[in-house]
Length: 295
Image (cartoon, rainbow, N blue to C red; front, side, top):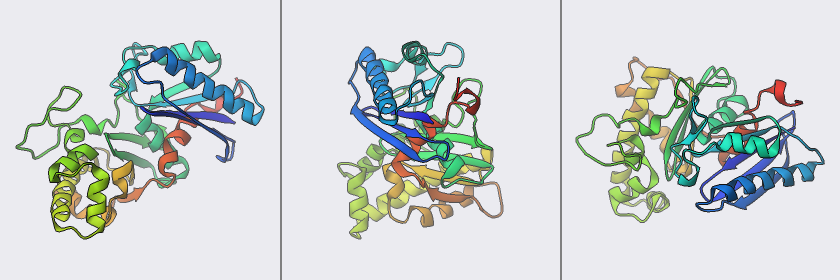
């Protein structure tokens, strides 16, 4: 058995998976806002509670985080939960829990989960996209996360959106990131809606203005994903996050990708995450190599 933890900005979710990938226990607590020490304690508390639930101690732990781990310094960076940035979170948690522990970006966890036994199962190359309050991406090849030299492999959300004559400053300090134009708040701003869910509701109701806003958003999303197709050429692109449930996404989007992809015919499969919101925590549980499970 192994434990997966999804460390989010508002909640910390944890599960225990057995060797067959079946869930044996689940816990969820609020994330202590702006409190590094409190977050460490909360994660450790979830781990201990899960172990009590299944009657096992010392289980390996995988953590999905909102940022990335610098491979040179082992410090977290790029977290929207800013109290985690420039902190040795993995090392501090290992010292506290005293067992095998691995950490990866939450998009990487989603990609790994879906590549192993989800919407990308059996595919050689899987790219995962998170479309929600933020935008993220991750690349998995033969069920292995491609982290890269700087630990940012697949970080599609903070690449420049192609084909723009606009200028929008992203929270990361760079201009015109994919996230700054395609995340839920950006989609809502395009049409004067309060949030991305309101856009989805308007679309479902047949609102003409929402349809125009949505079509322009799809065009930008298609150009951005064509870059992924041209570089990684994935067999499957898996989508998670709230915007992944927008009506007509999977039927309309291929026509917006194909004109910009360097191939005469687009055969990339576009699929929603099979495990839905659980993909992140399930992928986190799979981060620890199998040979470490009984260490």
